[in-house]
Image (cartoon, rainbow, N blue to C red; front, side, top):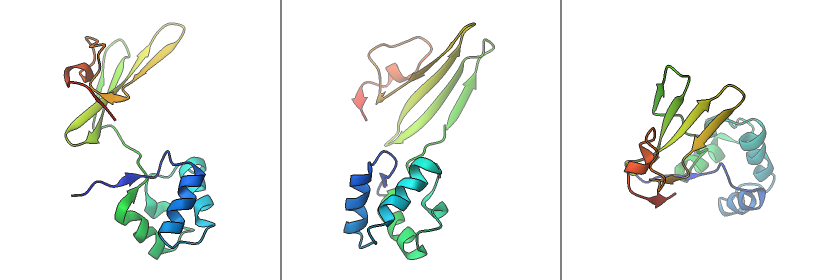
Length: 130
């Protein structure tokens, strides 16, 4: 299965290029931006002010790009570790670490990590920028 390109993260100028390449009307770029960044939809199907034909066209090569955790582990101290799939059998983690006066969120931005923290499996996967 061919992976799809995420729309989330594309600035308006890229969305404008995309709709032009797909033969969609120019105003569709602002509609896409609104759905992605204001309404925060999870799927192209939710973009109801785009025609069904244009939504189907987008879905052929694109996806919103929102990823739900594939696993969640909770500790008695309140720490929560989330595991996300980034495709090709690779995973990244996010760890929420509560403290008395603050909370910390550790987010993996690559597959693998050179820090190799004891609580995090990300560092045990090797290293690959995503």
